[in-house]
Image (tube, rainbow, N blue to C red; front, top):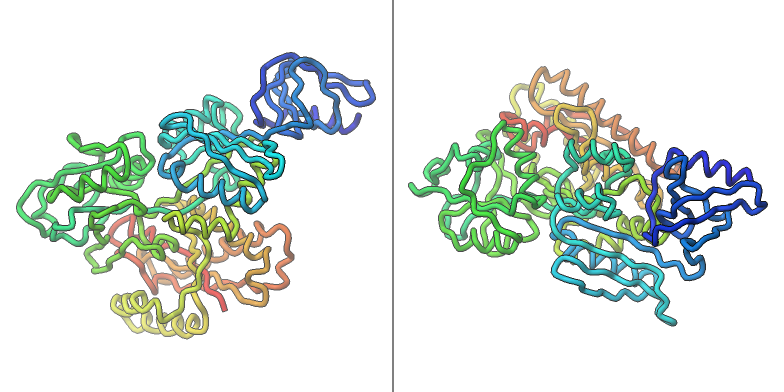
Length: 519
């Protein structure tokens, strides 16, 4: 009875979702019969009932009650249901591969049933008797549609190619879905990038992020401004609802205070976009790194001479400034156990292998030798100024030479001390690796770097503070280990090793980072 009462009062502060069932009258009665609660059953996830009552929407632990009434679900033949909506880039290939991998690892049979062009489901069942244990339903459309379905209570998870926007964040909080920008409300499934593409016959090989913004806004409309022929630039973009197109507007145009020009050719799929640009000798587009087809990708550069190209390593380290994480947003609802196990599986090593095989950039940490980073150190030496800079470089090389850099990096939101979305996911990914014993007996050094704005002493101090903040975030996220088997420390080198030019906000944001080095 005490358990039942506690569940009732705790339920006043919880909103959860599970399997949709026929809305009907039910009565939940404590096992001693002393307390009963009547209402309309909204959902059951195999463990908890979600009931609309005269007190509001309540969540009750099923182990403490008996359910009576025509709406009561079957406790013996329960099938976990999960509804997933959003980006077709994620839903067409990556998520099906992960669902099938999850089923295989758990000894289940996964059968895919196509409903129409945008809807399909996976039925997970036991291989011997074929008893269904889970039904994962997908709607693949766009990031916009995914958030709309979530707010309309028609989806449990959202596949997104961009971060949630302020309006969506506010609405989600108002309807009881929690703060969807909190660390546990989203996770990065894989990594992608916004890649500037042109025809293979186009002589231009690089552009800056600043010039890209001016091209997309129409301020630059001739290839001659980029070192190409005297000819107009024709622009190609994904449809306005796609996550990659919205990420371009959020992170490139808005940061420059510009808006997209009119007359842009829109394409419904990434494949169609890449094919159109490849055929158009005067075309330029921004495409998903995973689907550039036969088009040519441009490097990102700046007036100081740095060049960064999108590849698996620069995307994974977030050194490439237009990295685009592939998100799965998880509202503050209680999901069925099978769904929770699937979410846990997406962080495992087998899931990272599947992600890479599906053509996306995984998040498994890789160790990078000092010799493999010759370009970074060469750039650092090239931009070094006085003897103080050279002394800092010397200390950096001596400190880092015996170590290897992990591909896991941490960066911060523009103008804020808070880690960005990809880095918040990296915190949990690295914490889980530490818990699993991956770094037992080793030394992890969190190394802070800054941009070159302001006095060098201040930059060094800020870089050290950021390194310490990341270390503390990792320590707080490690739940099942006392950290006795791994040593964590911090160091900082301020502006000693820039990754990009400091003349733009994008370049400065790339340079403000915390790297992880391991001995």
